[in-house]
Image (tube, rainbow, N blue to C red; front, side, top):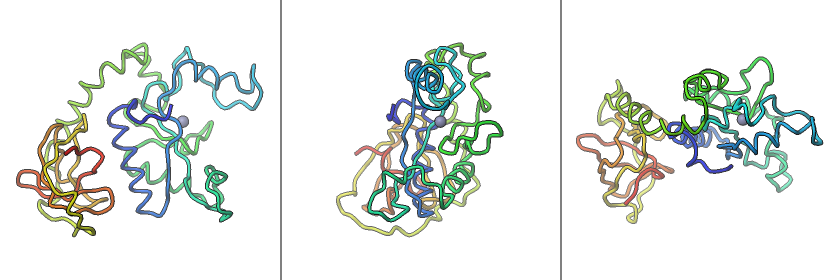
Length: 246
Ligand SMILES: [Zn+2]
């Protein structure tokens, strides 16, 4: 399923962050696979076994042994015309310029686990949250089924907010100059991200603080890319527009 909203809230934020970080490095990515149901996983498992094609996974749907079924993994593809034939679709998995390794490194820099670092089946387009180990063994042991794990997400994200809420070592009120002024962007916003939203010194810079859900911020119309320059209490910094609602 290609619905980011079904993923673990922390992964939702990291996925957007990774996309931004890639953009800054000249790489355009999109996401193909998000939360996978047991039936979808069974269809994949059948490939190369009871259905045509070659084997792509060792995980059966009913055993919940794919991290995709737990909402903590995501697959990316390239959204670029690498071979310059006027089409991007044929380059979604074109790794001739080793962009998958580059995206993997960027994902790792955000604390994500990259499937390309695995020893057995290397899974270049795959990234996942690193909090529960490489396989769902720990998740299965603790929660039994994905549904039970999904119910804990509200608590988990509240904890996450508390952890991130401590002001970081980033120096306060030091931030990049905004690149664009657009009067339409000016106004009061509310943080809509369940797990809170990072206020940063720049689009790809240190975190000043994490603003909890429903925090009020003010924008004077300045932005850089997808980040609005906002005032939050005594702080000023950049926050991703997708998690700010007017
Ligand atoms: Zn994957």
